[in-house]
Image (cartoon, rainbow, N blue to C red; front, side):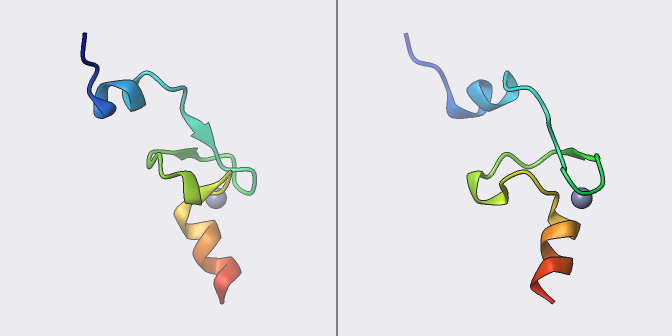
Length: 44
Ligand SMILES: [Zn+2]
């Protein structure tokens, strides 16, 4: 039985940003525990 990667990701619980508590929609591993905007603000 094949399970699509997208289906697998949908079943994961939503991550929450440790900075602003906002749910992180993207499931990229590189995002860690922070949302995109918090990551970008750190880089600057
Ligand atoms: Zn955030």
